[in-house]
Image (cartoon, rainbow, N blue to C red; front, side):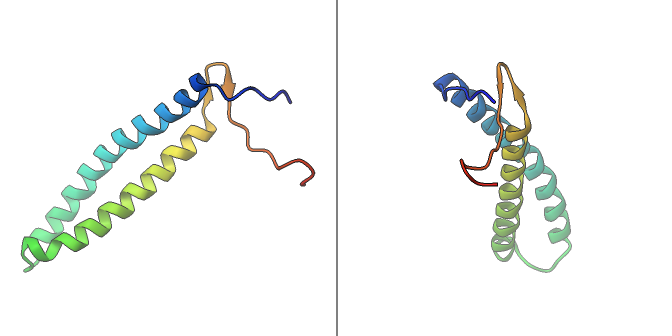
Length: 93
């Protein structure tokens, strides 16, 4: 298998895919999860200050999971002129 040079153009392609998918997906999932969580918490007797830590934890977990998913998408994508292949190090099986 021929190994290609890590050029700035290829780095930018991978970086850009991760960034725009993480940002776009984060906005969409944040809106949906925030809306659902907000609606559920609206029916509790807690005030907004008491909900903030829960909202922070849930938002952070959802954001982390989405970013991991966006990175997986970046690793599986076929880019223009290259794709990313995960190979064992030399000598490993």
